[in-house]
Length: 159
Image 1 (tube, rainbow, N blue to C red):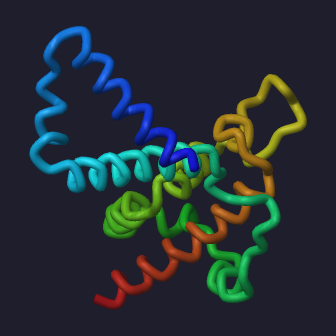
Image 2: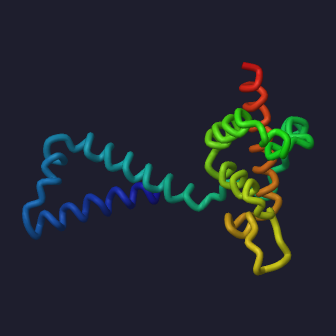
Image 3: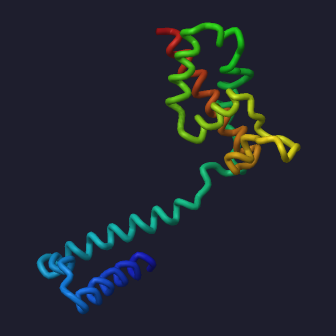
């Protein structure tokens, strides 16, 4: 219904602007009315879909980490001091982090800078405060990112 109203409003706006003075945007409606309406419907649909999904969170607090992710992560730490001493590992790690989705990449970069996930002290910046997400959401995405990093680094290490 919102899409239909958006289409009608757009068409009425064009008619009103043409009434005041000539508006060449209505010429396409005169030549090919059905295609113009179909295009308006597609544009309105895209706008509404974008608007409706823009307010959705990236992750839900109810999402549980799958057993596969838990098994893949285990006690894996991509920032192990022994590994970071190796130049090739650091280069591979940087490439692997760059290939992560934006939200996970931001979490990993903050962890790399030793920013805590959560802090009881209000004066201390934490990942959950900076990103505006719950601690559980941050931990879930951290675990997924670490599992992905582990797989990518193991695969690169074999080649």
